[in-house]
Image (tube, rainbow, N blue to C red; front, side, top):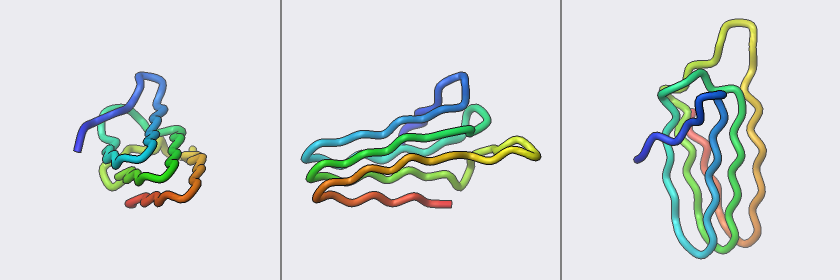
Length: 71
């Protein structure tokens, strides 16, 4: 899996008719967007750091596809 986090703590995973796997480890995780159209996405948050007192918001969109969020 590749690390895909922006410096502002956001991540984005999108796939069309394919599969994508991302893990969040670098920056504090504040939000993520994931979408799949006839494909699949895996967003691994097991190593994500969420700042104390904050929460991470995850937007999910799927059409004829599958999304997995690991935590």
